[in-house]
Length: 289
DNA sequence: CAATATACCTGGATGC
DNA sequence: TGCATCCAGGTATATT
Image (cartoon, rainbow, N blue to C red; front, side):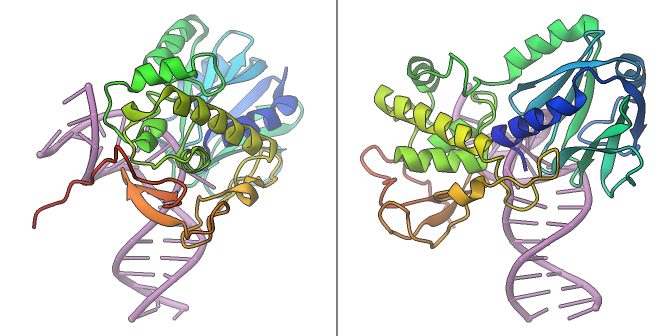
């Protein structure tokens, strides 16, 4: 499900429901997600404390508590958060429920269990910050997402631009859908080596990436199969997609059929006309038989 | 270090 | 209907 826009839509949707609410009780499915869910820390650091705000870093949500502890959630591929009356029956694949002091519950549902739940005690949040700085990339809406920085970051990398964008150690929050869309708008072939982008191309890419992410947030995210916001509403950005999921359909710009390939194991959609693999092209290595 | 493959899981779509 | 196969928005880890 979630790339940066879906996580951000979730964050904004939850905020009014959970601000200043106290967590009264915690329920766990007992199943392990990406990592085991830290039952003890949830009890000691989160239960009986109030939520002061929710921040987002990369695709993580950080629930900050009055005792400075942080509940860190990652939605993985299929994670969903919702606010429901406490008497609502638990759904299949619910894994965490936080009972709030207004008789509502925050529920985390994740069928594939690629999501994660972690707790950082208040005296360790500095370590969390350092961890993010070491492992997570540049925020697309931050000051560091500029053409000098990206041009420099890419200068020794032969990696294709799409894989570059999707590498979360380099850039945060851009997943498969938005990488495809950004490259289409910028007119770049997904396999163009990242180091070959000019500063001007980086500048265009940055603008297109931000524009795509912003529009997607405004539209409530992209609902390809089952993304729902925190009140159960679908996103509508799929109506504005140019190339993602549109194999064989006409390019919205030149009507050439969109092609689908696989790059780094991920479905890649592009227009062969508008995103030419020309000039300094990257030649696919052929496997000998 | 870079690129690719694989693993983690479930469910929906598709084809026989 | 059943069953096998493939595919999916993410990311850490192993392998080449």
